[in-house]
Length: 395
Image (cartoon, rainbow, N blue to C red):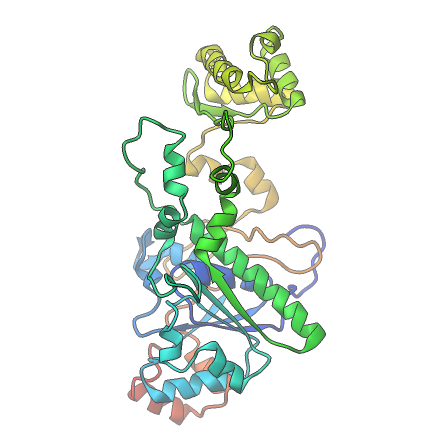
């Protein structure tokens, strides 16, 4: 948060029924919770897979907490007809439905958009999936690394490192988090539209579509190959540690040469000319040679003082503990029942509305009594009967 906030966030009063699990769907609704929306997370028997994810201590996953902070948890076995009836009674109380199953799964339960719209025409229904809700690949299962490979991202990385014999290993979740932010943007736009028109919306977020938009240069360069390509950002080694420097404009370059005390490099390595790409490689080699007398931290201090963009490579722990993080309140310390831990605050900073990561980290099914009793009006006896029948799961 920054500035003077009001008591409520921009999405206060909005209620979301969230069927999603893992990352892409849950992070979209986590962002909505940051802005004050009430998120009812409906978990299948056993709970969201991410509850068992690592890192974990005392049985609690902090990664689960990261993408689910601020939500209320209920649990139903959707294989039982009475559970579907409860979902529709909840639908009457909700503004938004979000799910990230494979296309066809929600229809199997009678919970697809057309079925829900027949009950509540103004509902905003968002689906996040690997390849979207239509097309020959729509029903394929996908996680972020699958989409990264299918989107051309992984092989494009190899073009920067010709010595690589195969794509690099890793567990990058970029497609998940980017798709979540696109889903959240589309939902908030649909809420705004409904305020004007009274009409609901069907939202279809394809992770493949999202990654093609992220890979803007690669997408267009594949159609119109450049004779020289583009300058590659090269990690450079200092006496101790690594750094990158980016003199992308004439001013950046002038600032860099001034900071290094190397005005003669302007003629030796002429950037922004037809010799740019050859000069760029030579400049990077020269900077790395100069840096052998300094640590990466010293390099960063010298170059940044002149104004050219530069940073040393930080560990995650070093980045988490930057003075900038503390100054902006970019970190919070919720308690998930296993103790406190550090977690990023919301990146959605609003000046007047309350925007922050909410401290609630729900137990599996923690809010069954509140949602089924207080919100839709089931008696205690009826809730207990549904528990005994294993329609309602968890607490």
